[in-house]
Length: 193
Picture 1 (spheres, helix red, strand yellow):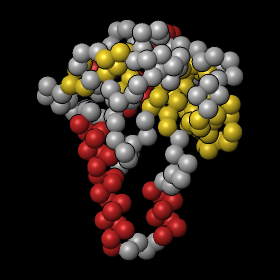
Picture 2: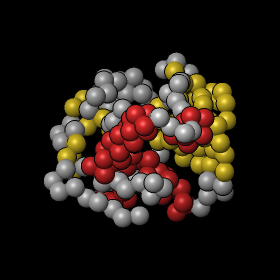
Picture 3: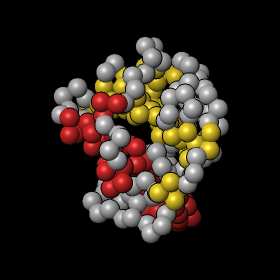
Picture 4: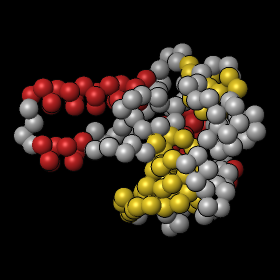
């Protein structure tokens, strides 16, 4: 995939004074420990290139989620790189999607997975699920992302509603293009589109 680095792009973050994790500016409390977040100065925009080059982000520094923090509810999919689950965040009392890396992944593949989710955490858009955190769950690097109860994936919509009405097709295309534009502004090019 081709990396795009927007010239002079900046993003505002908030930092947790307890755990030191950074979050998007719209967040008020740390999802890990509920501390009130503190505004930080604008930082260079994150993209795969800048996140991968960050020397402080070594996969061995990923914090371990407290035992029992995420209670699996339903398996969505699994494959050679890991498993996607709907889980209950028992601390915050909400459902999340838990993307758990496979124990069979080598260190480079695990690092790549973490780098991608860390880059994606810089995107805030209504048509892109928010990455809340990257933590180790039972020792495995995992991304904790937003769960949307009524979520339907584009391929499900296309299969169940085909052929699409023209206005419906335009609406879906606009939403998809808008989400891709947000990713491009963050310097990420989605290679599966």
